[in-house]
Image (cartoon, rainbow, N blue to C red; front, top):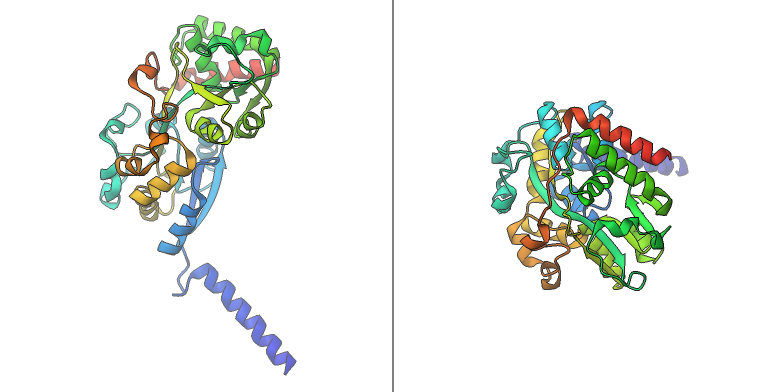
Length: 348
């Protein structure tokens, strides 16, 4: 009898495993592979999607657009969904790496604010659907920094030695240095780029660390006085530590847009479009915007957000706050110059 029970148990377990893979109908479940930034989605959104559509989601994270691009270009993984920034999207469109979207499968696109359509990185709105937007600025601890913070120059002030956190991102760190010098953050001019390199090398002894997502714990914990951060991260950190404040320096900064795209490595384009449409459902877009803290381009989701978030200029800056700011452009053939500069800075 025990042998029979054991056999039944093994059989039942085997059936359970098969069902978990194939679904109750016996058909193999679609596995959708998503590649997104770290901490850039409410995890319950993924679980709800899986239950609603009986689709498994494999979710991986990247730290920079350059990391994401290199992995996709190398063809290492058959991802179905990517969430790159504007300039990376432009580059991938130019290199024929992205599918055109069938907007009949994404009816919730109607909820995206027209201000975020027809932008230079995807002027015909054929390859991407806006996800979040924001700025790059300085987050500072008001108990450690008593002077006004209104310029990138404070990041070169020796009295804050080993109290400064810089983004471990070549476009952002080189970009803010170029803005401080009065140049475009999209410059390809060798003289201007060399000036930025020399300043970053000069600054390096003052830098506590070049960081990514770990900036959150460090600033919340009071480990540094100043940090270059993305605006949505600033919102989160300000919630956790009221001593923190965020500012867009007067020299201007980067206004960025992240959008959802489907790479040509995708084996499940229709399901990927279903996922994009799901992200554009009002409740889902609200849940993500509320969790992440970044500004949403979704008209109806924005209406549902707390008034203190909508009125916070860190998340939703006024036009005057964006004076002198720019959107990153694809550097194309000049990207190796930026790579060399960043390598030199990091190696000093």
